[in-house]
Image 1 (spheres, helix red, strand yellow):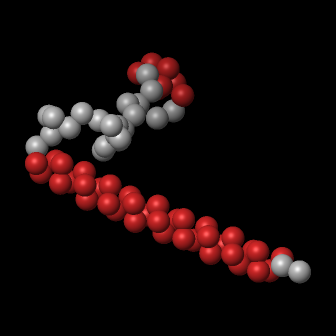
Image 2 (cartoon, one colour; image 1 turned 135 degrees about the horizontal axis):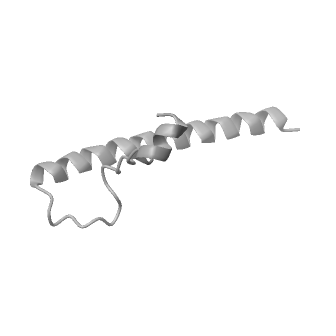
Length: 67
């Protein structure tokens, strides 16, 4: 969408997050809750992998610059 389209039609709608921490869960079905659990578990794994990569990078840099 170019600038003129945004001026005429407005900005495209933002995609909402699949889950928001602290969100009310009363209206979710059991299936939806299970999907969100799987989504959050996958996100935890992704975060742990990013953390581990940063720790390894930091350790390599510390070893390289150690006197």
